[in-house]
Each structure stands twice: as structure tokens, then as C-alpha cells.
Length: 181
Image (cartoon, rainbow, N blue to C red; front, side, top):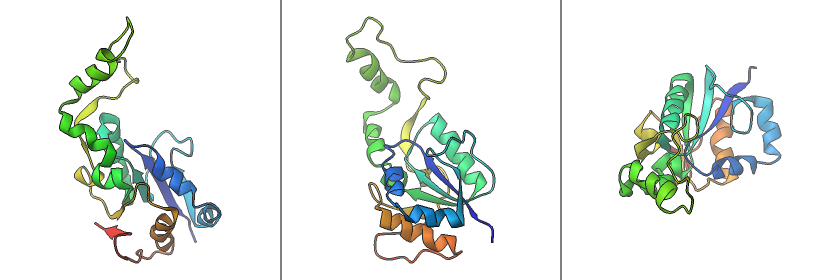
């Protein structure tokens, strides 16, 4: 039996969902028997791979780097799961949306509130990815197959979503815990 190719992705968010994933504790050893972690901020992999079976996507789409990555994730993954409230709704990451376009926000943060002679918005390549005009939930950009709400989703909810997938089955839907797209 071949292992499932599992990826976890971190877009615009706090990484709390990944911390909750690590709270699976000993079950991670069982998971490793059935899945290879092929991409994750937990692993040092730079390029999103081809032929991913399941991708857990944490965070909202907030900048051009996030947009490029989520498009690759969707193109190269069989099943995409919005992992946590930022991915599902935009949540905290999207709180900047009512403030308008990013340029005035960046100016306020990097120039107006700084006590420095060198106060300026970083503009060198690789320092600050260009922000999108609006932060978006993952499903507003690509097709999402499963929604895993929570801020962060508790480890038990993550296990309830992943364990059946390892057996080639759909997760059992119960209440607000797990939702199919």
C-alpha cells in the first residue's frame, strides 16, 4: 500500500493551526505510517510538489506570494482543505480589508508611527511581498474540497478530518466540526 502524499501550507495567518496539528502528539507517529509529509513549514521544502493527495491550507490569501502558492496548491493537489478560520473566512488576517488599499496602511505602519530617520516602506525584492488589495479566504481564490473551521481547529477535529482520508473514506460530518465544500 502506497502512502498518501500530505502537505500542510501556511499562507497569511499566525501558524496556530500548525501548532494544533502538532498537538496530535503520538497520533503523528501513526499518521507517518500512512502519509508522507511532502511539503510543510515544519519541513524544509522550498517548492510545492506535484501529485499531492491532501493539502491542509492554513491562513488567508493576503499577498502575491500567497496567491501564487495557493494556485500551485490547487493545481497540484487532489484534495484541498481550508484549515482553520483564516483559510475558511479570512478571520483576523482580513481585518485590514475595511481599511482600504494597503499603501496607506503600510505608510502608517512603516513611516508615520516609527521614530527613526530611516522610516520608509520596505521596497527591496524579497523583504515584503506585495499585498493584495483585499485579503481573501481560500475558497474565494480556488476550489476548496473540505472546510475545517476553528481558531485553531482542535487536534481532535484535525484527526477526525484526516484519519478517514487515510483510509480512502470521507470524514463523517457532525455538526459544525467538519464541512464539505
